Image (cartoon, rainbow, N blue to C red; front, side, top):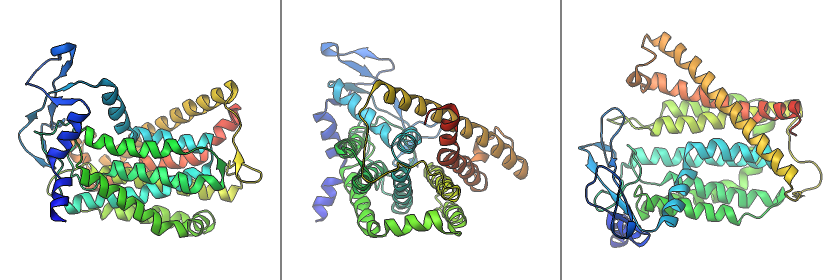
Amino acid sequence: MCSVVSYLSSSELVAGFQRACGLFPAPRSTHERLGPGNTRIHGRRNGTCQNGEHEANGHKSDAVRSDYEVKNWPLYFLFVGSATLGNEVFYITFLPFIHWNLDPFLCRRLVNMWAVVMYIGQVMKDMLKIPRPTSPPVVKLEQRIEFGMPSTHAMAATTIAFTLLLSAPERVKVGLVAAVVLSALVSLSRLYTGMHSALDVICGTLISALVLVVSYPHWDSLDFFQLNSSLSPAITLFLPLVLCYKYPELDHYSATRADTTIILGASAGCSVGYWFNQRLGITFEPTGPFPVTLPPLSTETFTLGVARFCVGVSILVLTRQVTKWIALRLLCLYYGVAVHNVSAHRRKEIEVPLKFSSYSAIGWVNSVVVCRVFTLVGLL
């Protein structure tokens, strides 16, 4: 058993997967150049942060230059693109897209489960403190100052895919093969980018599966409580905020606490918004007998979907900028620090309320305001 764990956690296994996919280390280079057979060789300095610190498995170290050459460009773009599906830009677009264009019920389920597994994964990273694969031999395509076990990308992708698989059939008739493919691609992308071992990815997937299995029988009860209990808004705001303040402390700064606060803040804001919609009796959910048959994709429905997406994302981005601008200045004024003092912004008493307030506002606007704007401008 120990030998299996050692094999799955080895950097050599990750490096072997990268080579099999056409990603190889290259000699040191300060500029992109053409290699044999017109293969482009890219040079980048891995582990360097904006503040001059350097990453080495979650700790500071000397910078390591890791150049690479790509011999299979389709796989490169496939896996690098798949890796972005586990980042903030995906969550702030995909989850609202489900709400605006498919079914708020599905979005609610997704947001709830996403927040739970991501909090578990982020806390486990900073408690276990297991390093990421080492470079060399691994080529690292991303820069992250955080630990590796488990892969929260794999956890989030698995949770989103199988929450859809379990929830959608009772609501809408829609094929979900793409969700399973997305889960697999995101998981494999963590090996390709050199950010996780096979063990990190496997454990992340299994943890998500366990959370889904344990929680699934209670989804309907939790959904009813979230929408109808008078205690729901207070609990869904207070509990996540306490969890953010109680996040495990490290001996160095890591972005995991900020990322976790963003996720819990967005989830809390959405939850309050769903409760608010229920009070008003305007939930924007599909009507009629379930499951609902989706209309065929026509030019009109496609144009409306794109218009809703563009308008909605613009509102969310505006909300983020305005809320962050106001909250940052109020917090800096209260604690007597300069607005442009980045190191002060990382203090828990500033970082947690700043992130939580900004993203809870985004969650509330996403679930309450955006659809009402769609109604006003004729996009619903």
